[in-house]
Length: 240
Image (cartoon, rainbow, N blue to C red):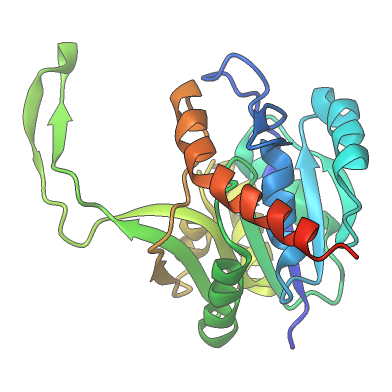
């Protein structure tokens, strides 16, 4: 089996939320812990590198100590001022033996361990794979004053998700090129694609919501609560 390192990006400032969204409670656990749980539970993951905003490091460490243990969490590093700089910091910390690197937004707590494993299998075969969803809404382009100026053909359009998984060498080369050009990218596929590497998109049939606005917490809570209750009941039923 390949050695798979996961870089969990949790270095944002949560500006659109108004509070630290990664530490807010969701179905009885902080948002970040749900994401850590999924990667801890995935048999294909060899290690996890957590990238944090420097100002949240102490709070997150305290939360991890309460929620853990996490045997796969190998390193915790500080992120940068932009997402691509945080991913680069995480890449520098992965194990030398890593064959594949999976980059995941910690604000996506609904991804399942099974889905992560499925994406890893695809990346091992193709070299690069990313979860995504076909765009189904009607898309409009607007100008000044948000007045509609035209329509966008949604055929062939996909909304990107994470994890996005790549051969380590591909991702390192892609980010080295990004940094050399002084550019910024919003996801890893953009960086890898710029070097001409093929990326396979995997349609994700399950919820993979990114916690961005306060309303997203209510949706995620309704989806996670039954799962957490089932896990709790199973543990109680297995007690001697």
